[in-house]
Length: 288
Image 1 (tube, rainbow, N blue to C red):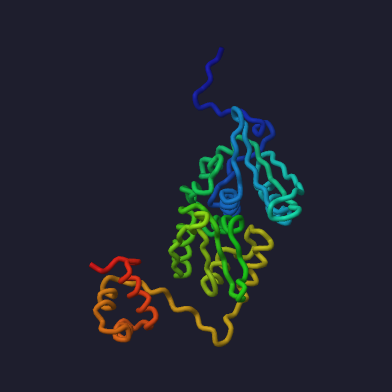
Image 2 (image 1 turned 180 degrees about the horizontal axis):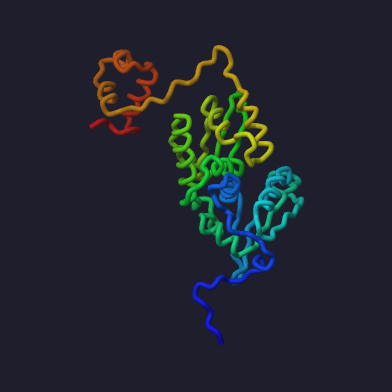
């Protein structure tokens, strides 16, 4: 019996059919970067007996077009199904599910950072080169929102359990817009809710949802609307967040009054008063 070469290519049905899978999930490709971000946020990898298993993505049927795009981008057999069922949130819910069973495809996704099983806290940005804005748009399309607040202010937001994902979004947005955030898990369910509003939201949305990009149609429409927002006459942008230093804290604590501190630091009395209260009540560390 002939010995098998140790590095021999394992024959698959795709070889027989002449299917080219070499470029699948090249994350420098904007479409695959978007798709991977979406799958990390809204997909589910499940293992079965032996080498069996599947990737599934279930979303509202109104967004079925994005699943058809995923199917088009995937050079392996996959299927899309629809169903209507009752849920705790709606009497009837019409959903669409994309299912991919190929072991080769699942292995590739898993190696890139899509874990099997429960993954909400485990996912991280890819550790290979990837198209960053397309990846983040995929994450936000799956687990975020774009639109207007009840006060009519444009916003873009993300809800996630992953510390790595929210940290990367904040890092990326700070470099892009200069807007800083200090994300914290909420006490109720341990989830991060990060939001950008007004000019920061407008700049980030325009950057992520550029013309011709792969995205959910309804969120692309919301992004286009945000791009046309104009700040109302008489409404002033919020001043940038103060970066307090130890020297500034010393001046604040040594000043005879809040008014003296505000004049010396060139900040409002209300900002100085809040910072002084935090220092005296142990909410922030005292300067050395």
